[in-house]
Amino acid sequence: MSDEIKVNFEVGLTPEQDKHFKARTRGRMRVHIREDARKNYIAHAVCPPAKGVVLSYADNLGLVEDQWLEVDTTHLFLTQYNCHGTTLRIYNRDIDAIEDDARVDMARCNYCGATTPDTDDPCDGCGKNNRQSFSTRWIPS
Image (cartoon, rainbow, N blue to C red):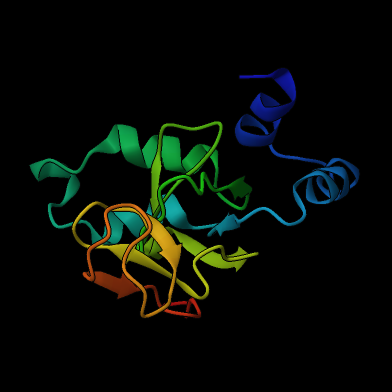
């Protein structure tokens, strides 16, 4: 991981640095992590902290609160995001905004997992007609 990315995820960006980060990532899908993502995860976890909440996940989520993360669009999902520069899988509950959503007008094949344009044609990856459309717009919770 480069020092520039490390600064972005570990200590945050100054407004000037953030402006350059946004310019560099324009046209790439990004998610904004809620400023209370760690607290929200702990409060809404299936198991309370005493019974097994993954505190390392919560602590790592706390490192990226109120940050923009670039999404790896190689494999897209409806409710979760793999982000460059972090091993965290980010969920819809952890974000409050999306920029340049790459899922608009796309579908995911239920057979081979390929992400392709949402048409009535067979999947480009496997040739089967077994695709599910992504929602065309993300709605904050």
